[in-house]
Length: 190
Image (cartoon, rainbow, N blue to C red; front, side):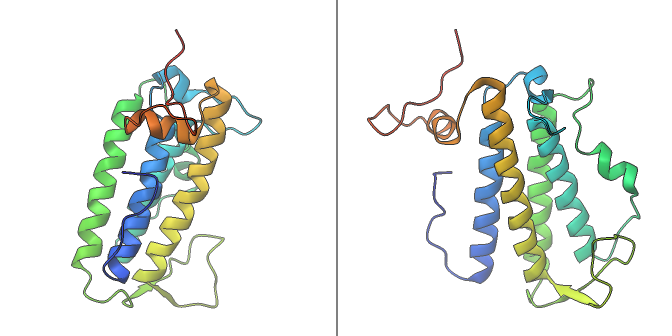
């Protein structure tokens, strides 16, 4: 996917396209990393690129369960665990699962006739408002875009701290852009 979202036909197309763009940015931050590098936490935060991807996978699935009113009651320990790439998890497997979650999200969104459909708010999450009964599917998609964009920025910072690679140089490498006065595609260190 190029650096910009292509023209969109309607609201649903726009929401899905912008979410896909942000997912692409997250995946690009992982380009060329080893499993060890994907687990690295080189900043003062506990975030790793692999952990961010694992978290975003869980976030998408959580929100689609909320849309389908099938929330499973995951607890705080599940929330914390999904930020860490364990020693037995690989970056490739986590990226594959992220792709599956994206496809699942697409299926749920396509099955919804009206983006204004009410989505009841789970009451057991402490940061959800207590004075609002429901959001809409539209709100959920906008929230997923916001959440993914926030964590895409985290992944960029962590990645740059791992090996100095920056977002546009990685995007140029992934998309096979020719070198130009504007940008040199990222290459692994020799």
